[in-house]
Length: 137
Image (cartoon, rainbow, N blue to C red):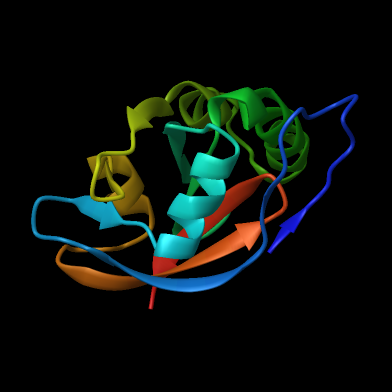
């Protein structure tokens, strides 16, 4: 289900919901067909991948939503993390990846390590407003 967001801040909506998916032996996450359709509807062909130091998960967000996610995460992390270096590592560790024709995206080793996921593995994808949180099932 797509919900409208404030157009002054974010130009495109995003998904809400809980989805099951699989990370294959080559560390590619196969996105649910509903997620792929929603991303295509909004002309989103790539996602930014981040390990999330606040929990055993990693984040996927459209590149244009990256500044909003980083601002919210940085505010939360600066209050809860002791190390400024760890905060910098989190902020600069994300990279962009394109969604292939089969609806797959490669996942960084640092994301898998942070989420304690060893492929192949079933995962849960939670749509949280402007991004997805991916964690082991």
